Amino acid sequence: MSLELGSVLPLRIDALAAGGDGIGRHEDLAIFVPLTAPGDLARVRVHQVRERFARAHLLSIEEPGKRREPACPYFARCGGCSWLHVPEATQTEARIRILRDALQRIAKRSDLPPIESRESPRTLGYRARARVAYAAGRVGFRMRGSHEIVPIEHCAVLDEPTQLELEQLRRRPPHGRGEREIRGFDVRAEGLQVSPGAFFQANRSLWRDWATLVAQCCGSGDVLLELFAGVGFYTVQLERRFERVLAVEQALSAADLRVNTRAEVFGTSVETFLQTYAWDPMPNVVLMNPPRIGCSREVMEALSEHLPRRIVYVSCEPSTLARDLGRLPTQYRIVRIVALDALPQTHHVEAIVVLESG
Ligand SMILES: C[S@@+](CC[C@H](N)C(=O)[O-])C[C@H]1O[C@@H](n2cnc3c(N)ncnc32)[C@H](O)[C@@H]1O
Image (cartoon, rainbow, N blue to C red; front, side, top):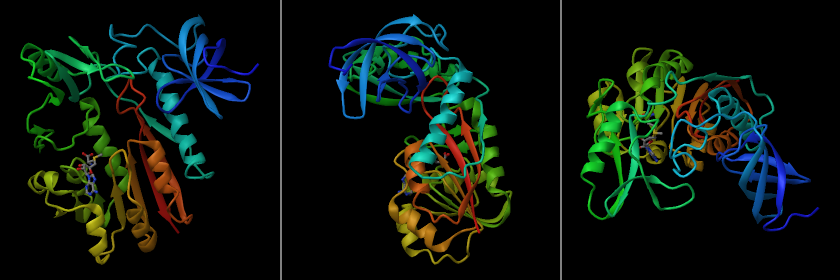
């Protein structure tokens, strides 16, 4: 039976896909359905058909799969958490599968070690910062698939101080419309100076263990080069393990980085830094933690030319991670992969990949 717009059909959901939707197969076509869970038998209505895939809306669940009652009244309307209806163990399995799939399909790596996972100590009430939207006196999060605002009184994943920030904003909504970041910490989180606008990891319950794990993946030695260092979340631990730490971060956060660490700070773009860096001293380890868009081609070319012995890539987006690793010479072996449940209840996948050359 060919699939047409508006077709209604039963669909068994096999897995959760990158982006958060459940995915099932109808003949040769993959069908993506939001708000479904692995094992669900769902009745769905198709609203988009492409050559290789289709998209459908969920009409009803005929047989429930690995699902549960979501712990939030805004679930399905609010665009914030797409997996609140799925138990944490199933979310973790999905993150590992999405990561493995990206590394195999996009980076074309068939030599992957088993993927380890690190769960978040808290799965609700863990978030120490969030982007909130406001318009015409309403304050909340963007609606799923829309720019409309769902007014939010209590958010299940915000920690207490950040929830209080949300309540304050609701009491005095800003004029006009826009977005604003709320934070449950002042300028000193974990003993670090974090100026307004500077990046800081969102999951408070993971802060300490996460930085320690990244530092362990880097090992110890003479010289470490850290690219995209932020305000020094990892740097402070790396200073105890390496004789010299060179840290690169664009101007705004570089000021905090200088206050927080004793590293040799380069307050410029990673691209500009690499254009002029003579690779003397030669780093034993390069740690990199770019934003979601990943690294530019020049960054991966510079690493490919100078071949540091170990590269530790921390990523919040498997597809760009895999693209960038695919640009490294094949002499780099992947020796360790860790998937982190950095933002439980969301489809966000955070990963650490350790590569060694030779
Ligand atoms: C995902 S954050 C990681 C920061 C830090 N590792 C942490 O965990 O807090 C990425 C950082 O890269 C910085 N950044 C983004 N593009 C950059 C570029 N082209 N050159 C230098 N820094 C950049 C951002 O300012 C941000 O601090």
